[in-house]
Image (cartoon, rainbow, N blue to C red; front, top):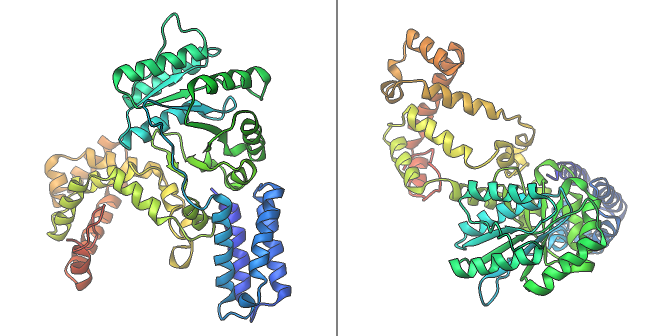
Length: 451
């Protein structure tokens, strides 16, 4: 996400650094380029105008123009304005004083409401809550069935409704009673959508709001629809009073204009972004981290959080010991790859890395997700003894492993070569001073320097 805007802004800053000194003229030219970059990223024109006024007022000051590092100061000003535009700080979900808390999930049909409801339920359950879901879309049985399937996959409860519960309000009230009786502290109400905003939809949602008294009304918007998502959010807020936004399909939107516009236009914060189809592809929205990603500075904090959530700490400590003692086997190698896959797509992980200095080429790196599958298949085709001692794998064994994994002998050879190089690197690093220092650090993933 934000790839296009990020590239353009980095070019502007690079040009500024190339100037002998900054003047009002070349600063003005740079600011015009930033404005064009925002508009081309599908940022709402009112938002782009307000943003540029804030940047211009600070960047054209004498303190910046006469500074020893004016280009760096401009980058800082742009980052600060981006953070202000996006919301300054992460907005938390509010809960009721008396459980169960009711949260309404609203939006147009096809925006991803039902999937987002399930993702949010999973997120909340991982945070210590006990959510229950209910679909009140009485017009599309498939929507209610979809939520039931997702709930089953996540091992989370969903209120299916009784024969007497025929209206959206009756279903929602039934879910709240169900939650009270089963000790659930949250009820997520997946509401009906339309292809466009109409009076019947709004009347139904207003009735639900009046009777359920929800602490949150979260509007789900599809980032791929750009300014249409912003207009819909604005209309829903006028009619319903939304409290936050979940922006879906952010992994497929290279421009990011909706994310930059929606808070300014509605006055309500972005609370979550959807970054993929899997149940765990929902991230809390952090304005400062997103601003860093837009400016190519990466989002290392989110990367570390992903690692901490996905990696088994005890297993990581065992792996560190094995690396230090040169006992890292092919089975361990396979287990590490499986852990890596839990973190999500490799491209999304690379997107969290800084795109400057020695890491600037990471963004253009092409990641073949199928390669991980092939490697795991090759190792799975080995016997336990072969995984424990790779030196046993001679020519005939390699041919057998290739046949069993549906790969070639060359693929097996490449894997063994890479594994051997990795072991050699770990061994050489674990013995040095750097290895000893790193070995004392508590990392959420295996330390390549041992310890």
